[in-house]
Image (cartoon, rainbow, N blue to C red; front, side, top):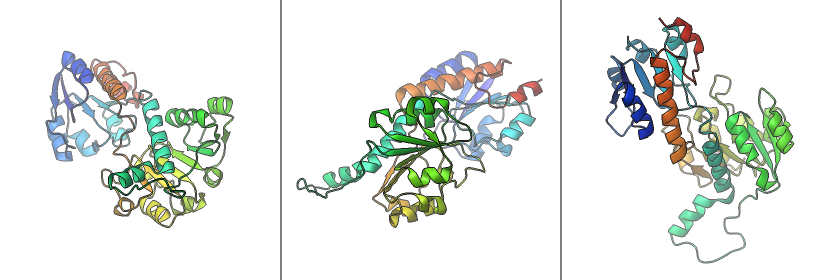
Length: 324
C-alpha cells in the first residue's frame, strides 16, 4: 500500500510509515497546491496531510484507492468529512498531544502583548533606549486580574489552569460546564457577553464551525475593556480581522496576540502596521516534543486504518462501517 505525505514531518512518524508502506513525500519546503495534492494522492491508499491542505471533494474523489486520511493536527475543518465518510474513508486527527504546548503559547502571547515585549525588543534593537523612564512602554499588569477563556476544552482548560501562579479570577464560556476549572480555580461559567465585558485578558480556544465564524467581531470588540488583551491560538476566522484592526487602531482594546489568521498565511495589511499586535506564525504546537508526538500519532492512526482497524483518533467512526 502507498501513503502520500503532503509535507516532511518529524522522522519518528515517517519511520513508522516506511516500515509498513511505500511512502511518497511532497518534495518541496512550501505548501503544496491543490493540483499538486491531487497528483500526489491519485494512486494512494492513505493521505497524511496538514491543516493547511485543502482536502475537499475534488481531492478526495480524485483518489479511487484512498481509504485513510490522517491529519497532522487537532483541527480538521480543512477536510470534507462528509465526502470522506460517504466513500468509507476514515479520517483521524492528533488531539491531546499539543494541549500544553498551545496553552503555553497562549500565555506567551498574552504576556508579550500585555507587557509590550516585541515592541520593546524593536525599540532596543533600533538604538532608541537611552535609559529608564517613568512612562516608557507602560503595559498591563496580570497578577490578580480577570482571565476570560472562550472555549473550555482541553487547550482552553489548560490555559486557564496555568493562571494559578497569577492568582487570577477566571471566567469561561462554553456549551458545557467544566467541573475541573470550577473546582480548581473557582472559575465561573458565564455568557460570552458577560465575559467580554468583565475580563482583562481573553484567550480564544474554540473550534471553527459556522457558529464560531467571526465570533469576535465589531460588536464583541466594543464590549471589551479599553485595557483588555486578546489572544487567539484557535482558528483565524473566529475573529473578524478588519474589525480587530479598527479596534486596535482606535484603542477600543489595549493589545492582541495572534497565532492564527483569517486568511492564513496572509495577515490583514492594517494589522501589520500596528505596534499593539504580537504576531506568531502558527506556532501553537511548535515544540520538539509535541511535533514529534503528533507525527507518531498520525502515523499510528494511518497504520491502524490501512490495516483494517479503527484508528485510535478517528473523527468519523461511522465511515468504519462503510468499509468493504
